[in-house]
Image 1: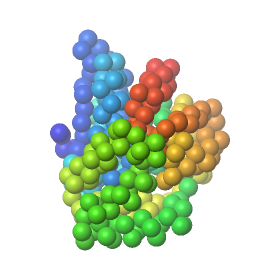
Image 2: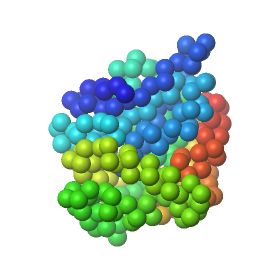
Image 3: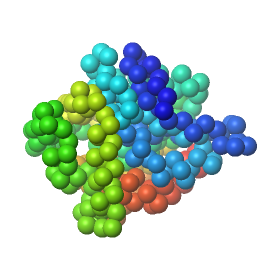
Length: 272
């Protein structure tokens, strides 16, 4: 664990460093989805760290990061945090992988700072605003969480975060337990802000046509939070991008189908 002061807020970053014998290996920065932390990429980091410098960030207010000192959790602010981190790490360019909220950041990063990216991987995300019918539901869950925590909500939240194949399969209990542990380790004040940052986010469809970074779009076939149609919009809006739909995965595809996702990410970053 290492806390970086990014725009006045202490943010947790995990960095494997350069692989043995490969001091100039490219870096991959992983941005997680709402409620989670960099731990949702544990399988990918373990598989890729022999060839790449793997870095995970816990966005402000989530994981082991502190609540935002300035009270800001919007996607533009998270993007400036990522740029500040890249600068502090002394990296000129890197590969960026972002899931859901991490993807909201990734699209902004690629559109506004293309010179910093070698490649972009977007998982289970959307370029649009939150669906109106979901906003009230998520706000209600956020208000309940504010007063009594996540544990009473875990059944409902799990149905949003994971696909039916995962929940009904042999790893269902394990992935839900990991979600409970990650959320339980975060400070409630920060998590409330992060939830609002997602529900109230500004759309970024207008940025898609300006993205020139080689882009891979991945979505779980069972994703109910950001369904396949959302990824189809992104892929059609970014010239030259490629869309992969992963069977047996929902919104948290890196945890649900880790081997498939790792292979897709590896092939994409290897090519660039």
